[in-house]
Amino acid sequence: MLAAPSPFPYAVTVVYLGVGLLARTVLKTRPSAARAVTRASGAMMIVIGGFLLVERLVG
Image (cartoon, rainbow, N blue to C red; front, side):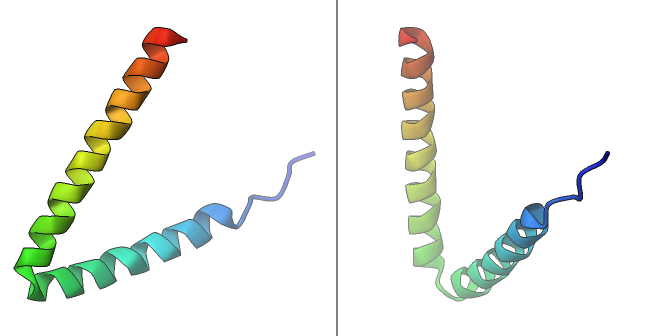
């Protein structure tokens, strides 16, 4: 018997679409904030990548 599809992916899609549209609207009017967000997200990606690399090498 097949299970009914979960509504979770649809809810996540709607939320992320809304967040993305709102962020684009806000950051378009504030270039300095857009640069700060870009730098912060880049730094977080490097930290997460480093963590995953260390975890893989150790584990």
